[in-house]
Length: 449
Image (cartoon, rainbow, N blue to C red; front, side, top):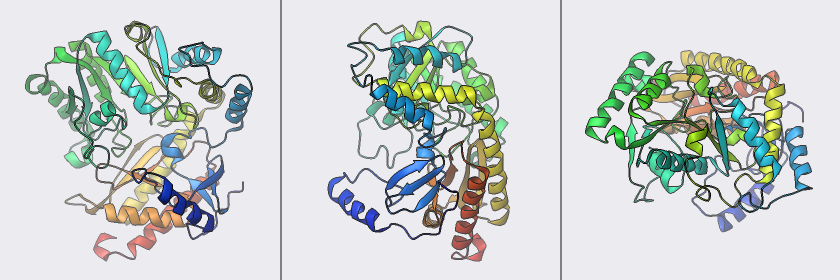
């Protein structure tokens, strides 16, 4: 595919036909950011069923770090499909599962013996990490954080702090889940250092007012909150969390589902703060689009639950394991973490210029190739501006850019571009964002532009 992305009006005729079928046969609760249907993809480019081509700045919500239809991954899946598709590891084992476990533990931080468990989705991995932590400690309580997102199952939905659309009218929720404040310097009106200190102090206060420390099995944290709006743990915050966990015998679980596999400029985001979690949860870019996730952690903790207590029919499927092994090959051969840092610098600089030009850009933040900007109605009050966020996304979509939002108030534009994006594609995508901003700014009062 060439880098040229034409202007287009979406959706096209074929997408409209499929949209009508979708409305007739697909449950309404499944949402989509764009009203087009993908047909094929390559690297950082997606082509829809009408032949329209898009630069992908969403990456399947952080799933395509190595790029779409990476030949090595496609070939590994095909080769495995010709040999073995499924037995269920709980019935008859197969080599790719064991090989993947052997290799992935080497990439996870921690100078101690580690083991791995494979599952299907990020939510499933978080849920199993909670199960393991509860069994290993004999304690019931779990602490998550404000603005966090961990999934849509009952347990992970309970842990997720945003009500709509994730939790509303889906209760009652799972018991023994508590939420601590996460550093959000922009809305806390604090420096990152002060915000981190405040939140660590508030966590200690929770052990007096909300849940006894000796009843807490684990603290689960995203090093950079994904759906919550790309809030980055300030330097030292994760080390502070780990110290609190060690003080009270609590397990430290890092949710690296969106941040893992080079997204933040390191293989895993916890490496920025020099910490090694007891358990680390992975998914998304682990399989380059194949449904696979994992829990990797200290051997003695992973071995706490007895045989038969963990697993699932499709968990660690041979095809998914083959894809994940090919992904690890790519990461071992190519310095994608450095490329992620380069992408992040370029996007951060571009977004900062937008912030200087448009008063509705309240904050720009990120870590490595995980960058976002928060849009507001007024910089003084910081009132969220969801409407202008939606307008900018729509304008970008219509010009050939896949772009998505995040945040508690749906007012954060985030970038998760595949790390294989070319410089020209990256520049063109950022230029489309410029155009979208200019179009929307001309349609709003000058005081907001």
